[in-house]
Length: 134
Image (cartoon, rainbow, N blue to C red):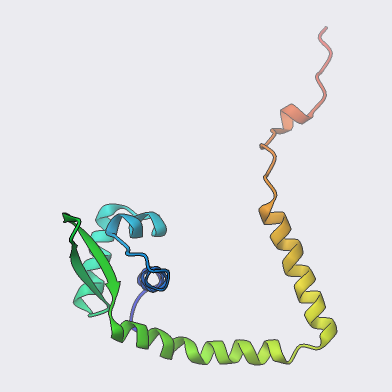
C-alpha cells in the first residue's frame, strides 16, 4: 500500500469506524494514535494526497471534518491482508485438537491477567522491614 505503520493504523481505524457506523474526526484519530494535532494534520495531508482518505465538512459543525477511507483503500487493504489471513488460517487449521486446547488455555490465561486490575507499584524501601531506631 506504500504507507508507513502509523498511516496503516490510521486507515485501519477509519475502516473500523465505518464498519461500526461511526464517523471519525481528526481529533478522534489523534486520540486513537496518541499523536499531536500537528502530526495528525501531516498524516491526513499525506493520506489525502495519496488518495487513501477523503475529508468532508461535518454538516453539524462546518468547522469540523469527517474522515473516510476511500474505496480504493478498502480494496488495497483487503488485497494486502488476504494472503496473510490465508496463511494464518492454514496455521490454525493445522493444529491438532490438543494443540488447539493448549492455545485456547494460554490465550484465556493471558486475557485474565490483562483484565485483572493491577496493584499499585510498591518501592523496594516500602517492602523492606523498618529498621529499628538506635
